[in-house]
Structures are given as C-alpha cells and as structure tokens.
Image (cartoon, rainbow, N blue to C red; front, top):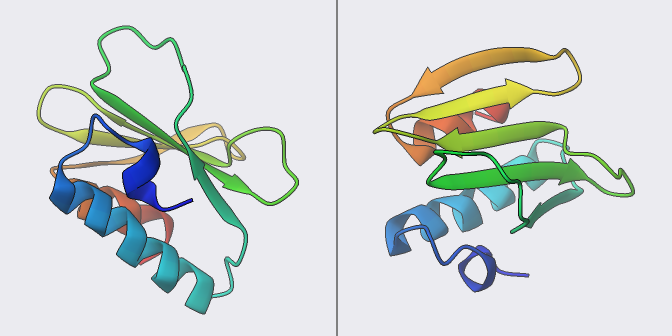
Length: 96
C-alpha cells in the first residue's frame, strides 16, 4: 500500500519521504517492510509509524512524532536509537 493511502496525519512531503525510503530500504536488503497505520494508543503522539518485517507480528521499529521532533525506537534491542528533527532524518536512523 502506498504510504499516502495510510498516513492521513502526515504532510504530503512526509508521505513522499516514506515512499522514497521504502525504495532505499528494499535496495539495501530490507525487502519486507510494511508500513501500516494502526491505533497505537500513545498519548500525546501526533503521528506514529510502525515498521514491520514480513511475517512478523510486532514492529521492529517505531517512529513517533511529538512536539517538533521524531523519536526512533528499536524494539529488538529495546532502545531509543535517536531523536530527529524531521521524518527523513528519523527514517535514516533505521536505513540510511
């Protein structure tokens, strides 16, 4: 599904960023990325993006936008891997 179909809370530029990132991720061997809008129930978050590997029931990474910044969480290591000012920067923390 194109990112634009799922993420109505994101700007057109952010949706384009996700679509471009998915291509880069596939080119770097992360060939099974599923970005799906879900009800994450995280209070205060303006946008949340779960990044899944094919066949996995849980997100491998979670990107959340709060007050002017994105946080990137790696669920496999259970760590925050960074804060980023924009979605492009946040996605680059997962796959540059």
